[in-house]
Amino acid sequence: MTLKGKTAIVTGSSSGIGKAIALEMARKGANVIVNYRSSEEEALEVLKEVKVLTDGLAIKADVSNEEEMKSLFEETVKKFGRVDIVVANAGLQVDSPFLEMDLKQWQTVIDVNLTGQFIAMNLAARQFMKQEHKMGQARGNIICMSSVHDMIPWAGHVNYAASKGGVSMLMKSVAQELAPKGIRVNAISPGAIKTSINEEAWSNPANLKELNKLIPYKRIGQPIDVAKAAVWLASVESDYVVGETLYVDGGMMLYPEFSDNG
Ligand code: NAD
Image (cartoon, rainbow, N blue to C red; front, side):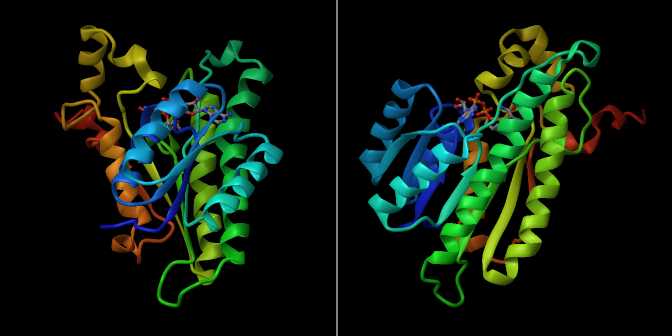
């Protein structure tokens, strides 16, 4: 499984899952664009690790800002001549009980998690169409970072669950439209992965014990678990996989609450 000679943009890759994907893609030979919104220092650290393996750039851009994302794509093409893989990974949570949730909390999450993915996918597809395309190979590859909450309702997080449910139909509809052009679009839906986004769920033993009740495989996921799936989805090894969501969740989607007959 190689990504040698490919150029990959990974949004929100100064930390967590995005960082693991950036490094794993570099390990497989891709040049990697480390995108960040504010944490330049962390992004430069990731870039340093990328550069030991291949080449890359760290580029500041807010995924919900189309102009900043356009500049990110332009800078990438200027440096590497093309884009082959785009991982729309950046995301956030702004949690609140529904009765207290205001429009700003709703809009912030939709802007980043859903509109941000639309912008990255749209710019990716336009760039792929400009590039030379070898018959028998994908013209380009888009991976959307979704969540088990594209299927599992989540009280107290309705903005997040709605954004990921939206990502699911966005991904499938774009996949249906772009497959005839040779562009592959898929999603990964992680379960509970140990990153800063869900620190509360794993940072003390009592919470971790509760979390494990939801995970048949009885361990919290690590960013590398998702990164390995992303490399596979971006590689020719998964060439016939189109419009799919790969759940990387230790079995969280298996309704473990029913394992003793409910
Ligand atoms: P994280 O907080 O470490 O990573 C999210 C990254 O997105 C951060 O680097 C953050 O700076 C960046 N980001 C946020 N808003 C941005 C913006 N407007 N522009 C550019 N970058 C922005 O958390 P993570 O767990 O690595 O999350 C990565 C993705 O995985 C998210 O889409 C998240 O919804 C998804 N996910 C995570 C889990 C989990 O359990 N950790 C589960 C399911 C899905």
